[in-house]
Image (cartoon, rainbow, N blue to C red):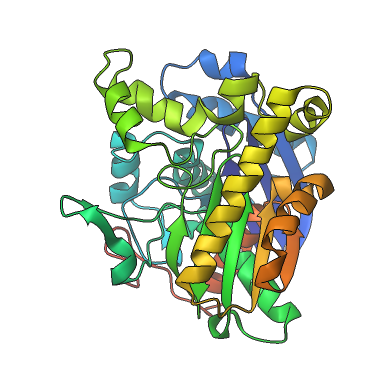
Length: 357
């Protein structure tokens, strides 16, 4: 069983080949700011990204038509239940229109389909960021015209929830976790017996991160919206990839930020603020689960930093057990989701209604 997994991100395209669950090949193909600037829209990057993956596979001696399935990271789709989804025209049409915003993960289904066609194999996405399992009480916002929704790193959070449950000798569906994905964007989920029932998100009410603003004061955001300085599309882009550490310090690299924080008071303050806001989000969702949790799980790229996690642990250790599972782990999680479908352990879902195929 050979599965190609692809994860397009804002600064790179990650891909890996798994055979019967074992990684045979993995490559992180960087994309510079200059290369991205050469394209006016996200979808214009598709050909270049596919060509780069093809070149990496050829260099490794891997035929691009030798896969039993190809799976891509899902993008900013309409709200849907968790699971593995077959790529279809409705999914691609929605991502072309991008009503929930442009994000590199929107390319995932298109890349997966491109390589799946070469192998006459199925193309899937697994647990996209638009997985929405919020409880009814969590949807109430305070304004009847606006409901709270979910945009969360569901893929990695659920995969790490399964791994942490295994560490505890339990099933993921039997556990209550607060899981913080600490990456380019920070999202935190309340996992209640297999469902993400509430979230603190990178675009709505969460902490700022490498290049995302997180939650902003509503009054200030309203003034900015009507200031004439930005169009709606420009503001959406700023929220996703133009604010956060990048706008304050000119870098999104946590290693550089940590070094600068040793000498620059402003960098030190911003680092403290990021930790502070992240800890607040973890505590908020622990309260949403009545404080009855099996563990807090820290994952994502920033969880590799012992200094960052030590600062965060100082603030959240009162909550009980904290399990650190660093890295994004998304390629493995994608391949595992596709493999569960191929082994008939799960049924593939249909977009957009979430019904089983």
